[in-house]
Image 1 (cartoon, rainbow, N blue to C red):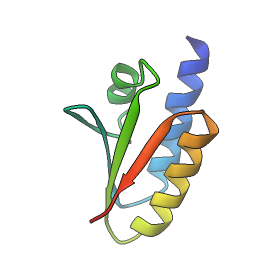
Image 2: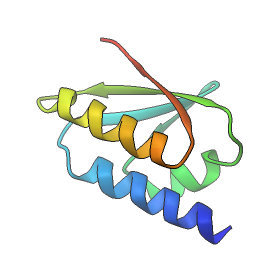
Image 3: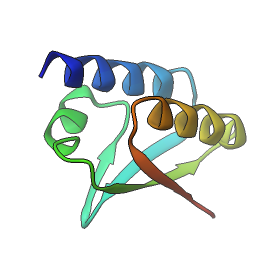
Length: 81
């Protein structure tokens, strides 16, 4: 479980560097990636996730978020505008 803590903190800290809105979609749930609590309840299994990123620094945010998810072995797809 402590491994999970590190993943959640890493993901939310990475998201926090950007002003863009970064939303994680897991099945029919939408979670603000900057919310540690939201992530905790969502990153329970290695399912596939979709990221919706909108804002002034969206391109950089998409790249950084994809990298942090891959680093932790999480399968994520960045959804286009």
